[in-house]
Length: 177
Image 1 (tube, rainbow, N blue to C red):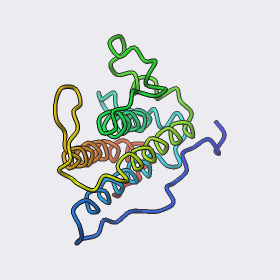
Image 2: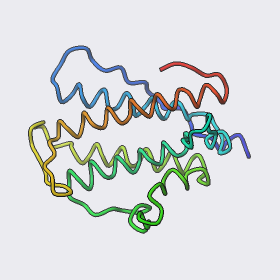
Image 3: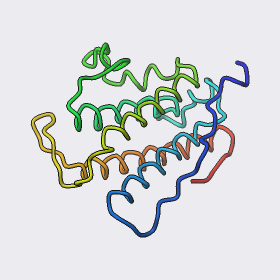
Image 4: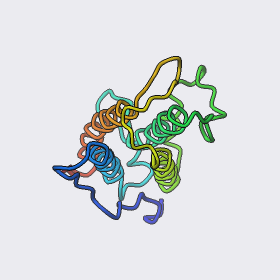
């Protein structure tokens, strides 16, 4: 595989402020973890992104595609009430409940990065005008506040960034974050 077909490193590292308004702080922590996950995949080719550790089926490719889906689900579908877009809309989720994890190893690194970054940008725009953390929406017959969604996304990223640490270290010894 040509060296150019790798995920480029993120341009800016995010360091959340230690004081400030709650909404801004939550978004900064979320952006920080978004950047960490991308940094864990940066510079790796398709074969490296498909690396597994031990008996786990997780891969960095799968985590990028999974988090693109999670961004779509919580910010666009839940918060805005939109229907799924592609590539998610045409997936038979009952037949392939782990579709995003299973198919990601066949995706080109740049395509994965583009999918992930586009999902993040759509997520940001979904809440640009939402400043009330107590505001709620109905999704899957339950109420969800913007605060809960942001905290849940931070938790989801934190867990997967820990997985990504282990996988990346097994590939080339890179540690950090």
